[in-house]
Length: 176
Image (tube, rainbow, N blue to C red; front, side, top):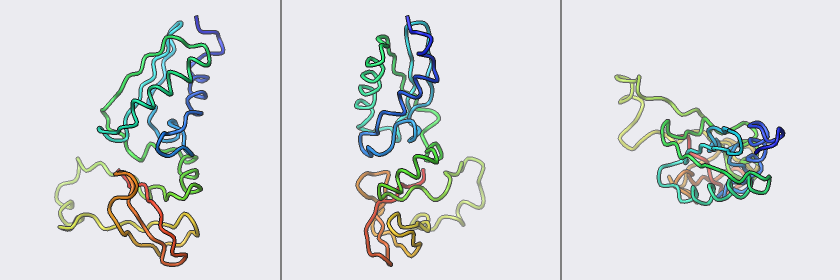
């Protein structure tokens, strides 16, 4: 049986200590992957949402969740993968965005937009080449004098940018 101290809030705290396997400076909670925690007697269910449907890190994350909870005496762990609603960068915590910036990755600069309600303005907002690159601040010097050099960075969820002032390259976590 889970002790009184092993309530859902405590489990959330334990999960905050699990780093993302691709960006170890940010936790899976800060990244918004953990959607829900339910403690029921001696079992805990953790619901996770991948950052994208083909994310290769989800098995590593599930294993890390099981191991972290086992270290705290939780033996019955159920992992539920929830695909809908799809993960969005809007779920990144403010602390997570600060950690990304400190690590040299520019966090998303805008909120993901629900396009389901847009009709007529969508065509005007997006050119044939896709949406314009957002104004991204350099995580090294803070300058907005930056340019996107590649639509994809070290992973598909990031774009590669370069600062025109300090000349440092950096990843930008794309808004999606």
